Image 1: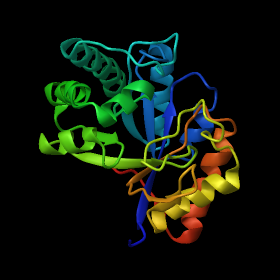
Image 2 (image 1 turned 120 degrees about the vertical axis):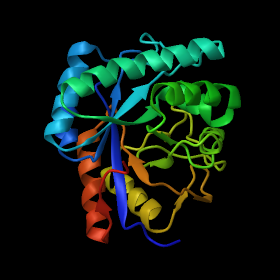
Image 3 (image 1 turned 30 degrees about the vertical axis):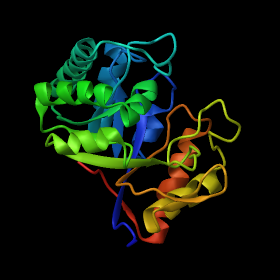
Image 4 (image 1 turned 135 degrees about the vertical axis):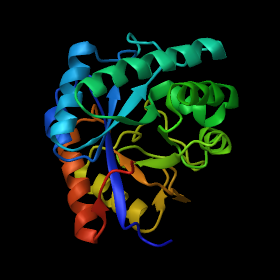
Length: 250
């Protein structure tokens, strides 16, 4: 694999973790919570405004309506209900973004919805339907090689793959459950090296020790991972030292 010339660095923000200002000075794309799993009108406005000041691309971090479980509990919603819910969340963040003189550029699902979309065509199609109905120019950021990516591409959406520098993968190329020991990686040196490996070779070690392929245009560091600011700073520095520029994918 040829090393990436440019790699996006994204982060989940507007979730009340207290790191947003520092992270927005490091990342190139911001996945902003739309009020379903986290966030509210004030938080969205502040996060969007800070993203604009830092010239960071703005994306909608949509999720199941599950504030109590932080969007990490699977929900079985009828397809029509899920489509309407995602459209509602897009409309809320879009209004805030437009008021700040900016533009909503992409969508990334959060937590349980992200993982369900990867393997469930019905759920993937429900989210894709919301994007197409709301604004078909929005890009979808999702798991490479997933059903969500395949279905979105087939339906004419712009789709980009992402990888996670601070999360362990299974042999199947899926994220290891957070309940599993070692699933969340907090060592800055390890996270930075994984980011470089993904950008340069497209390969990393799974949690079981197998070398797997992970092809991505964007790298994520979670805003709620312990030491997120340190991790994001280490990733950016390591990428740039390797000759990979950090820049938004949209």
